[in-house]
Length: 253
Image 1 (cartoon, rainbow, N blue to C red):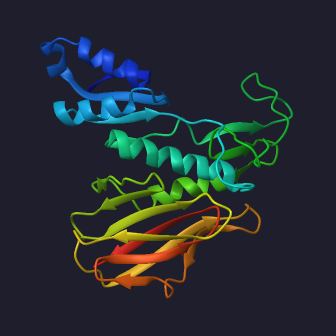
Image 2 (image 1 turned 180 degrees about the horizontal axis):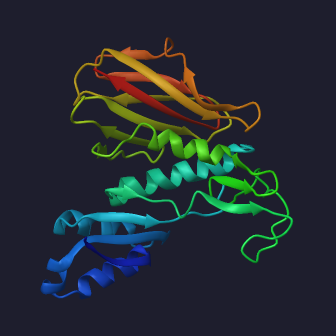
């Protein structure tokens, strides 16, 4: 059992709380937890965590934000992906935790005193990754759910996050296999060319990619992408990213 403190709603409050603890209190705390609903102090808290060496969690966040250009159902998915990358690159926490997977319910009789009667507008922003239809007894997965999987399926416990200067990318290195996973976002309505430098990681024998784009009915959901068009360089690779898409590249030894 460990003591976690203090699970503040915003990063600035979390930093102030940590600085108010006595040395004896800090010795008893095993983890510092913050939410990132307000990011006014996110860079400062991230730097403090590095300086003090404490275990930092981003323990709760979600929102009804959107991103992309005419992105349709991908607008909420792109917002989530951008939020994850923004938080990870600045805080470098050992965990990033979504508020909850299911936040919307369809139930004619009412659910937990809430008379939720219809599906949320998935062309706009919404909370959660999936919708529970109690009347049909089924879970409805959204493109936002698949966006989360572009990270969680390929960046696993024990991987080391490699911070990126561009908030369209997040990289993780597996110290056991030597593989590297890179999540890349294109929130534009046109294809975007990207180049990633891997000079610090050496050579890779294989590249594969998985992508989420489009809508929940006809779109891509963790779709295996043909990597024959990847341009290999001595120090990295270059590739065009599909409009309004999230792609995870896995570089294998």
